[in-house]
Image: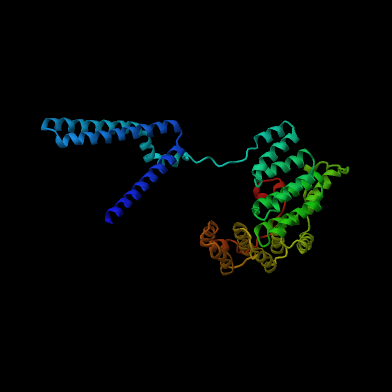
Amino acid sequence: MSQILETIGSFILFGFLLGFVGWLFWRTLKRSDDPPKLIFKWVLSIALVTGEILLCHGVGGSLAGGGELGGMGAAFLLASSTAMVGIILGIIWAPNISELLFKPLTDLIDGGNEPPEPKPCYSTAQTKRMRREFLEAVVATREQLARFPNDMEGVMLLAAIQAEDLKDLSAAEMTLNHFCDRPDAPPKQVAAAMNQLADWHIKLAQDFDSARAALEKIITRFPDTELLLQAAQRIAHLGGTEKQLLASLDRQPMAVPEGIKNVGLLKSSGHLRPAGIDPAQLAAVYVKHLEQHPLDTEVREKLAIIYADYYKRLDLATLELNQLVEQPNQPTKRVAHWLNLLADLQIRLGADYETVRPTLEKIVERFPDLSVAELARTRLARLKLETKGQKETPGVKLGVYEQNIGLKYGSPRQL
């Protein structure tokens, strides 16, 4: 019974070794750059090992029954043949063994046998576009997009050719909408595509309603994000862009008044300066604008400065800037900028150290590990000097001196 189990175990071990050798042979053959050469090495190696085994079997019999001299000759023959076979096998397999040992290191440098990641190539399409072969450029771009349908570069190139070269803005809009309507489309790429579409609507068609609709898609698609704030900011200023564009298209003749003669002889030229915009009127315009576009951070910041510098109402300026600071998803640098601006306005209006200090400390509390916090700490260190320097210096009442003293003649004593 034990002999049967031993025989079965031997067969299992032999099968395992044979399977391992077969797997190793197939794996090596598959990864080889020259399969015929590798097959030749294996055949030659098997022949040498088989011949050596047969030789050892034959020489072993002579060693068992021969004399001392014959036994020594057989042993020398066996040792020499074994060494020769080892040397031949070493020469045959040395490159493969060295490759096996050092390949992990070389793979870190050249990437190994892994094929490069496939990427789209738009050089043909761009060349045809430069040659003004726009339809051919569209075909070349679509060929790449057929292989890489979600590639942002290809989508934008196709839409640009359609909008700018073929003057087919509706086709460009369909191309971008098809890309942006995918649920897995990256948010920043969607926002970039819709902003570009808005630019084309304004530049190519003067269609501000369609531009606004493209930007509103960002607001609908990504609520409570920084992308929403950026889109809302741009929508708030579409009216100004529209006025500038219409003014450039409808240029009316403008009468130029005659210049002032002998301006160098006037006592004062203050009346010649153009009248500035009344801050009160400007504040009213800003308030009305913010009623329609409450997320317009640029206008709200300007309104806060008018409240502080013109009306001397630090409370109203603080209210506006705090509203900006508390808006969610605002960039870190913008929040730090508004808090520093509030500190500037507090110092300009005579606030003391204990009033300004909590404003700057908010930056440190909100962003303790960022560079804006380090800048705030530096400013806090010199805040007492900053507030002291803004305090009003008591005026010194001077005597009344005769004017135009430099126009009189005579010696200094007569003056």
